[in-house]
Amino acid sequence: MAQTATLTAEPRTVRGTGEMRRLRQAGRTPAVIYGHGREPASLSLSSFELGRLLEQIVPASTIVDVTVGDATYKTLIREVQRHALRPGILHVDFYEIKADEKITLEVPVHLVGIPDGVRNQGGILDQVLRTVEIEVLPADIPERVELDVTALTIGKSVPVSALSIPRARILNDAALTICTVVAPRVEEVVAPVAGAVEGAVVEGAEGAAAVAAPAGTPVAEPELIRKRKPDEDEDEDDKKKKK
Image (tube, rainbow, N blue to C red; front, side, top):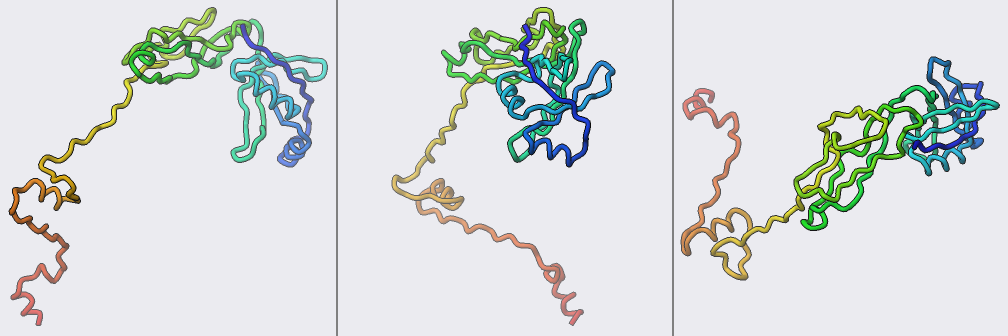
């Protein structure tokens, strides 16, 4: 069943940046409610009550009863705008819903159990898809979708087609991967250089050459490669003619 919550709001008639700032300084959060062809209505909410509510619910899949005066509207939170640098909520969008009309929303996917590939083979569980999009009546909105992964072994994955949500239609591509168990990473061990003398310090390409070559073999000096100057491209006769 759908999770529900309640909020009380007040109508907001004055708009503009200055009014928004004054509202927030007074402990109120600007909001708007829209949907079903109605004119959007501007509201304000207690910032404290709103913040406490958002800590307790999953906003995208929770029905919020918003009371404005004598009227109560069933809504879903469509957007929560937060400040990029400071704590606090800047604005909230509520979408009005009807009990007999299906809606589209996202619900979280919760993995249940420890996969066999993790427990017995040292694998790592990777959840690729954390929410699924569904079409459902408001009364049938699930709080979350649970997926049992205990039988999952290394290299195996679970697609969207494995999910089953009563009275809801899943809109995601059925072939999308929800989760998979991957093999643990193995650290590469570098083998010691053959013929290296114990206690000797071998550095760079010259050291490598010295180790590889037989004893007494001189090590070739590296060739110096540099860009020729324009004058060096001319032969001696051309240089004399210029003089």
